[in-house]
Length: 154
Image (cartoon, rainbow, N blue to C red; front, side, top):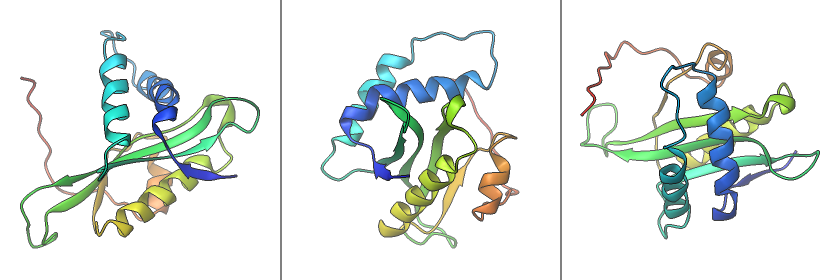
């Protein structure tokens, strides 16, 4: 298995895999309006001179396209006692295509992404875990936090 960092040429496949992941969380208000903005955002961010977003992928061994990916960004907040420079990695869009599961692809992508965070000097990483993904993340060292999260739609 070969893990590599995604390039702008992978954007369509990254959006396709994201749709598979999002479909795992059933909602009545599904639409595809997000695809074009997501594609534009990925293209811009993967092309940046100093990227704060990285994606690691496994190519489909059975044909064209990608089998799996893990995407992450570096968020920068004000420093605090747990992160002096305020930089935190945020993992999202971890998905393996249905027919490619149970081969270690998501784990390999996650390990590459976590190493990229370390190489960038990031010492903390956050994510939201689905029940299916939680065993993988726990095995990599993630743990539930007591931080209360809230959201408001504007």
